Image (tube, rainbow over all chains, first blue to last red; front, side, top):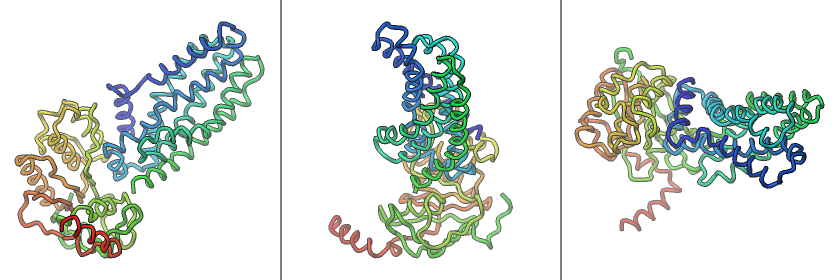
Length: 218
Length: 216
């Protein structure tokens, strides 16, 4: 398992692996929104929680189709499926590697993006916390979607359509956490629900992902 | 691996039916592969050699019949090698050695004459060198039964001989192999199984008609 994780991380940081692309996309999106809505700080600060979370969702979506597609194309998925590793473990490790290369950089860069969007000061800590608690669910759900579409040519768009509705609960509670923090209300309740969604997704979805992969490999 | 025990087969298939895309293409396939034996599957393109190997490897469920083999017995090597171009030869092999927990990569590199290439990225290898890397992976799995799909494609004569020696050593150690191949594997006296009589009938009639048209 650790060997597979190490390989995926290594592939991500080597040429063409796409490490950091999600954070760069996030930065571009946030900058565009700031330009698009104009220089009024109050408005920007009000919509910042929503923009930041939608940005995180879209950045995450960018690299989803690579989770299994590359291993499918070069036959590595066949070899992993016939190896001693349980396919559920492979699915979990792949989702974890995706989160480490996509979600974690977003979490680290989030305070800077919050600053760009005029997010009120006290909300920054909750922005980081909510992304830290919420983005693992994005990777787990995304890996499931990627497994469902793995054999399809140009499955990327279908993958987005499948996965985005499943991202809604995470988006709702993630945004609500940051919004409440920004307005000085107590953000604990939506945050706990957000963490609950992540724990549920991480616990259950690797099994669904493995089942989808088995169906695709037939 | 322990000393060869030739009484119990390494792989026994009985009444196996194989499906591809939901359509049964092979029916009533029964054979056994003894330890220390390599068997070659033959048959025209599209008869289902690859599907049969994938079914035996456990990637697809059999439509009927049974497959008897020791648990965790198979090492499957398909058309594709599953090697990552941006990783070096040694890094690629190390992954599989660690996944299968079966020892180091040095003997495998040496056996397939990859020592000089160990630090090269796999993307810079030629097709034949890549194939050698794919076959070296079999050695790091430590599994007794090799399922090989056209193992010698794009190998030159020297590499075919190299692989034949590796395969002979694997068989001598009590291993077994089932290979789908149109080419000569370089080992004399291998038993061959022709799959043509096992073609599933309904599809076969149509396919035969088409084949006759194509070749006629």
